[in-house]
Image (cartoon, rainbow, N blue to C red):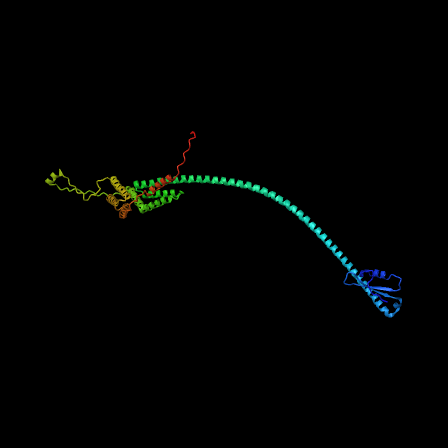
Amino acid sequence: MRIRGRPPCGIGIGRRSSCRSECTAGTTPHVAIFRCRPTTSSASMCNMETETPAARSAPASREPGRQGNAGTPSRRTGMIWLLVLLAVLVALGWWLQRQLREQGSEQTRALETRLDQITRSNEQLRRDLDSLRSRDADAKAINQGIREELLAYNERSRALEDAVANLAEQHLGHRDAMALDEAEFILQLAGERLALFRDANGALAAYRLADSALAAAEDPLFANVRQTIAAEMRALEEAKPVQVRASLDDLVEIAAGLHALPLKKTIATPIADKRPLSRWREILARFVRINDDSAAPQLSTRNDELNRSLIAVDVHIAETMLLARDESGFKAALARVRGGVANAFDPDDVRVQATAATLDRLAAMPMAPALPQLGSALGELRNLRTTRALSRPTPAPIPNQGATP
């Protein structure tokens, strides 16, 4: 007889052994087999089989019991393997957890070490930063002191520059004043020399000195005066002072060589006629004397020194006419000198011939142009000085020390 049903204990799959023990307890000679199967509900369902001893010996009735006994070890083995697998998984989880814990500990220690190093580095950097801040503060203080000293030096240098500029301006002012005085004096001297001595060469040299004196001045206003001086210098050069100077040198040489020229040879006086005079001639001879001078030299009655002196005077007159640019007077004086030399000195002498040739050359030479009128540069320079004096500020009067405020 087989009875299938739920076990009275109501135990699930996990308590299969206890369920069997409880269900087989009793006095009735039969075997009760419970087969527990999982169901969809929370409780387990057990199939109970009851076998009698007579039925245990029957072959037909043993097959189902063997099949049930054969399924129980396989389930046990599965459960064992499941438990082993769970144990392995638990062990593996524990091992992994331990490894992770150790690795985390090592990382934590490394991080702590790194943190300590970073902390020490931060402390060192903080100390270095504090040192740099202190040095920066010291440097700022030093720079501030240097800046103040530099500003003081700049103020001093600016004051020195102003003082030097004032001194330079005063120096230039005095230098320009001296240049003006020198140029004015030289221009005035040149004009007087040209007016008194008709010396164009001397006046030209004086104008060059005045131009160099104004060139040393720093004021650009002097450029106009220098242009006027240059114009008057060109006018003096156009008066041919070199030609006049050469002519004067020739005349001076002629005057100096007059004492060395030989005189003309004396011609013998013809013998007077010894014929007797008539009565009327004797009577007239008491009152009138007639002499024939056609064969005698023109200056025979003059002394030799007087002749030389007269010729020298004519030479000086020619010099004066040359300086005065008087062409007619110069030509007349040269003609007198030429006649005196021809009458008083030996025409066959070489020196007399050279003197006569020089006189002829001077007489044929055209007269130099008239001398220019000077004074424009001098007047402009004086006007410039007056303008500068008016434009200069009047210095403030010095207060009296003894006066009461």
